Length: 210
Ligand SMILES: C[S@@+](CC[C@H](N)C(=O)[O-])C[C@H]1O[C@@H](n2cnc3c(N)ncnc32)[C@H](O)[C@@H]1O
Image (cartoon, rainbow, N blue to C red):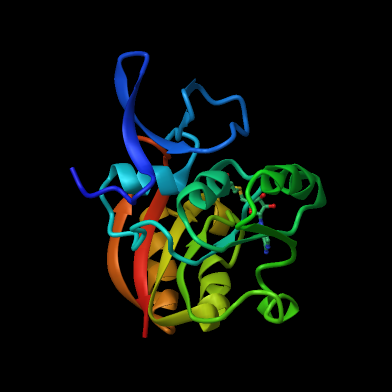
């Protein structure tokens, strides 16, 4: 078992050891005192941590989270991280994200398009430790490459790549090869691995900025 970030623990829920963080509940997840279950089946980052991928999160890092949706995963990230900037371009989930942030003073929701980092570069600090990306949209490598500017010299990209978002007809492995190849324009790949059994046809990628 790998070291978990400070602020993430394995706790017993229904007799099974599961990831948990400490914070206000967000989406009806089971709780154990002040701890709340972080379900790897609902969170690609949770799956990467379950797979002991080197996500570069020890606790307290500064994070840019791309594709925050209504805040399921980024709420857990904010529970154990430092400043956490959450970019989401769909207005409806961003409304939910705003209420998630009410209880989390270190979580900054941004209604922005992650393909256009120049529209939030004046708000997001530079020299960030980690970018977490889960945009599930065509052009996932392009999004990651355009946002590399926010990372510190040894900052990490932690991305979940969804094959079907790029091409529904292609073999997932072919899609992954193309995406990883495009990422090497800005990053050195540290580790890739399938997120099964938690998420089908998703590749987890950890990379450092070149
Ligand atoms: C799979 S969902 C994210 C789930 C979320 N990461 C979680 O674990 O709680 C993908 C999200 O990315 C958002 N998204 C897609 N393309 C985007 C873009 N260019 N900029 C910002 N958000 C984007 C979608 O609106 C959607 O909410």
